Length: 123
Image 1: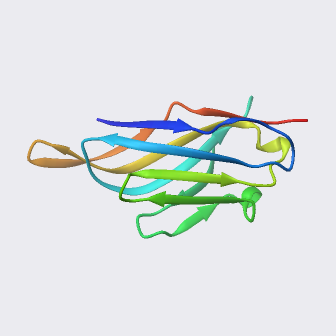
Image 2: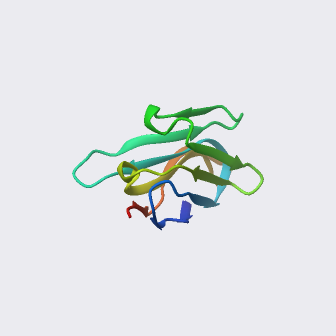
């Protein structure tokens, strides 16, 4: 019932910047936590950053000081600004959203994932 559309991935040189965006649509009643995960080849998916409805953020240690997560509650979007990119940041990045959807006169919890967007950091 909730679709996520990601954009903004691509190829960038070390030290460069990219901005990822994710838009949620559907029968959304409310959104709690929004976030980004990533998965590099041969590795498990890992949390990159999350942001709550109140604006509290959390980052994996390896991206602190370089990445910034932000959200627009009015438009149900979440962005990830990535600066000072390193080759080890290369991965498929996935947007994820948790909240509640409308089902008739009721609501229920949901968690949705985006399709993933490739980020490649290479010279």
